[in-house]
Image (cartoon, rainbow, N blue to C red; front, top):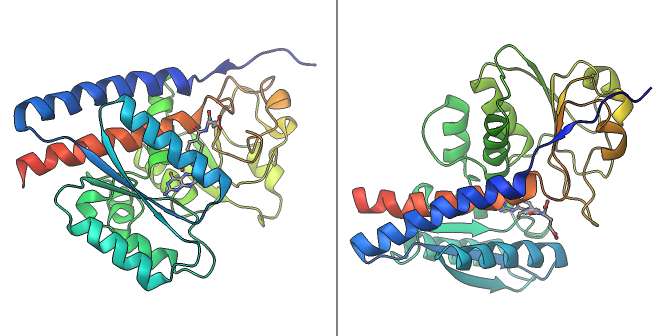
Length: 285
Ligand SMILES: Nc1nc2c(c(=O)[nH]1)N[C@@H](CN(C=O)c1ccc(C(=O)N[C@@H](CCC(=O)O)C(=O)O)cc1)CN2
């Protein structure tokens, strides 16, 4: 019997508030140092979803008074060509943050390209340097979606201490780092993925479930523990999440919608970290 309706975790509203603060901080930097924070966006090819996400990032930058410099590259670019472009942006003093939109194409060594981002400009949290900082619990730039998820959990006062957090997904910029951040907040973390045997039974144990597997409606609401907090980090075509929302909302206590949950938070964290990178440069030029 369906007894409860989960409260929605409103990522759109929280992202708007974070971006307002970033806009004020960007304005402050401009006034005090006559420097305007700048995000370089690098897009390989013309994958329609990636084009949309990069446009969204540029539009939010513009709204927040953050400059963006777009660098489109043909789908045929080689690994060395991409590394050369990213290295040049890393060395360009006018650029404070670099976003290399994922995915970059199967023929490219994406890791090599990410590693060409200077650590102090890794506002997207995709380099090994940032990954290690997240793992050690040291200050640094977080991967944007994991960072956005943690902000949502805090906004809704979710106590993570001793809670069983199940992360379904293991990508280097989403599943793995969000598990590390949850562990750093004293949750007991289990990583699962598309090949996990007996996944439903593990999902049923989750106090906090993070679905980040990239498969539409992969998590069935019937497998969600009553009262669980459900974070749907899926961004499948048609704005469909990794969780079957209609069934899950009757089991969870809190749930992120798709759209309007984790997605906007990803961009808010990217902008916030871009402004932060510019501010850090003022302290340590
Ligand atoms: N270098 C990176 N590449 C990618 C990342 C990333 O964080 N860094 N994340 C994903 C996708 N992504 C950003 O790039 C992203 C996906 C979805 C949204 C979003 O706000 N979605 C909206 C709905 C969008 C719509 O209406 O079309 C929502 O959920 O409300 C933002 C960012 C892949 N690559």
